[in-house]
Image (cartoon, rainbow, N blue to C red; front, side, top):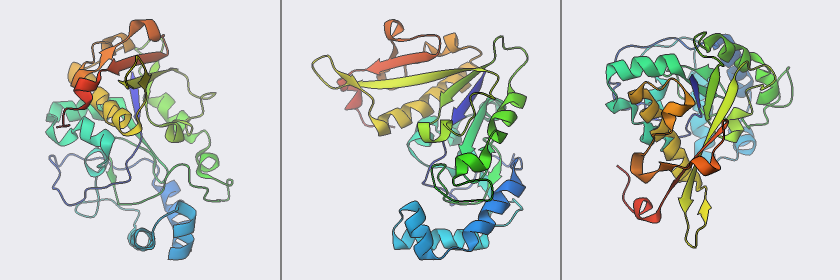
Length: 266
């Protein structure tokens, strides 16, 4: 069973990594080709393309200029330790054991607009390039066309022969999961849905809460050494509970009540 995760916009390259163990990213030449295109753009171009403030546009223009197709600390850091958004706060990788990180490396993939796919311990340089960015390349008008079937082809190589049928658990956002060509992917895709009680019997997906829950789910799967979707049904972090009546073989639904939402995350 393989887990898919989105990256985060926020990055942490200041905190020292908890392990020196690291691997090299998979699609360096493809990333370098994208960086070459981005280097030709002005800060104003980047601000318009990515809907960024002038300050963020200037920061990322500097990142593109400094980017190199070689990866070593301190200029590069393991992806799962470098990303720093809601998902990664839920996952809390710096406080996983080294054995947990090894399992995570073997069972999770982080989708990326620039790097295509990052394994958790792959080194990466700081960047900003969302998968939904309409960056024109020789392969098409956006990054979905740029990556084509390449991401799905790679994921197929990661599927375990012991899994019958092979399963990919999608913990990524729609923006990123769309980059996986489902016609090429040789696996059943299982989605996890996280809903919050909003009163009067109504439950809704709240974006930032769902993001954190995805990280919590991957942490749970890692520590439980989950092998099948059934193993995920016991997930109960921060008040979530599995709802069998709303779930299906390809959709696992988890809900929680307001009293748990009001507690501070930590």
